[in-house]
Length: 301
Image 1: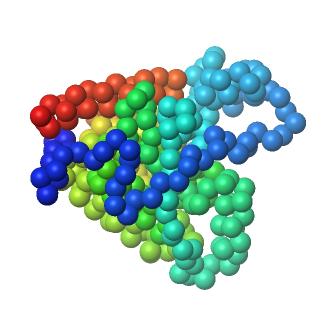
Image 2: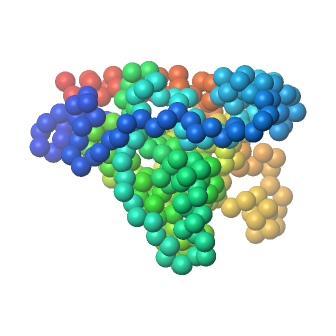
Image 3: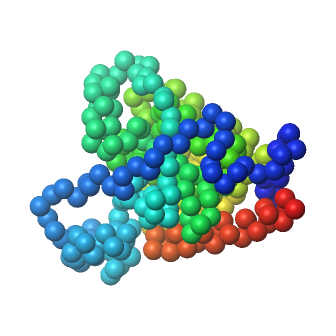
């Protein structure tokens, strides 16, 4: 695998202050706008039914200590679980809202979600350190229209790859999406080609791309940038696929194997390199970055 070498002008890697032309980083976002605002102080696992304190499940990164069920978490909580404290700085994007189909109440829904989640759109991307190793990290926000990919999300993914290339850093993307955003019609589907092209440019220039597939990663996201990485990791039990199992069964007229489209099935059949628990994700990513960083430094000598 290639790693970033010299720039076209002969200069070496970007400096350590995350500075590059036309990339603007803003101060770290707050760790969490609490989604746990109910009066309940306990957490009940949806799989095994065990009940534990809310504080305990938070410390365990929303992984059930009994059965290992990985509950959905917000984009901010995901960032705080992998990034070194105080190092995450968001890539600033000014992408205007578009409603190409004049979908009823779409603008009101987007504005409401911005207020509720504190996010600009369905993706949070920035530069951070993971155990001291610098990387661009982008997280799809399942709390923002199910992490669906419309025009804005496609542009944000593309900008994240462009930032990683200019800063000469690896990129890690955590996917969690229901697919293309129906409110934007065909323009939503066009983001599949746009993001795939961004991956291709990044790869051709020697970038390291790590994809982390979380529950669920489906539709146009799974059929584009989510599955084009150099290294593909998945969380246990994650649903990963394009169309739903019921649609596939109706199309081919056959019963699907048990566990079809789950992370474990995909690992067994070579579509996923490794299944990693959320509790081990930070260490695993740091190890990958460390190994490739050594090769990169050797390349630059």
